[in-house]
Figure 1 (spheres, helix red, strand yellow):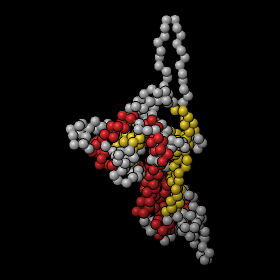
Figure 2 (figure 1 turned 90 degrees about the vertical axis):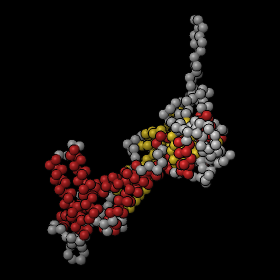
Figure 3 (figure 1 turned 120 degrees about the vertical axis):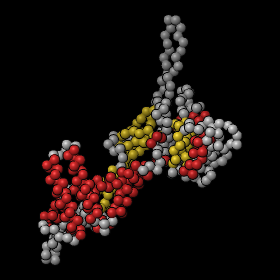
Figure 4 (figure 1 turned 45 degrees about the vertical axis):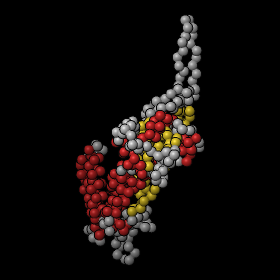
Length: 383
């Protein structure tokens, strides 16, 4: 416990020093508070180690009523969880357009998938004809809460198991990031979205293993996309999202000057024309591994996917459950207070919860394809 209380004490004292720099409290008040924090945590360490303080009752009251432990442990876990959350297994960010919603209710977004009419030759003293303007397509989506509770055992804290404490906090961040990555992967790797792409024909899906020739075919397919008015659109292949088993194949295609799968001198025309993104959550049986192609959502207003978040919640948050335990005097006659229990009454565990809020577009026919014109699918099965 001594290692943990020392780290928590330092964390809380740094918080107070940062508050001074931000102008939230005055330096004399901060110095006094920093000293009090040191006394509280040292008393807590002594109590958990079996060393009695001179003023037991007063010290116990200070530790049990102070919010310093709550603030310190939450800040400590947040700092350990952040690196885990930032360790990306699937860097999906370029694939999705971010959006922010004010609450949990369904919102409407209108997607303009039409062009205006071309200009027409107007004769002398003639008036131009009125153009036709088609309605935008309505899209609806909402956000939901995603949560999980994690407990730190009282025994782990008392046993000085700092490695366990730090490791579990880091894993909380990893779990939060992994949950979001799996959610985004399911935007396109789901039966509904795949069936919709396959049903649209050869310009949206094919069967075939990943080769430079098939990437070229996908690029040609994007080049034939039109808007709802029949006008050509600037839908350029930008990203190849692939199964992790295709890592070497992608590297070979990206680095070869000549077509790697052909014993000819043909130039590799797709070299350097796309960005590869490995999706570790795609499933398949080698050598028939799936892959996808997508446009950049910033180009030509073609937005394959949307990731919505709640306003003011840009990422996961960690919250601590307040302890439901109070210190009481001994019933054995001496009236010696019991050591402070920092967790819940039943188990002594410190209970933390990771919570995040996000959502996306959902349609019974299209799945999560916000704009199908920005997507292309291959099952990876040999033709």
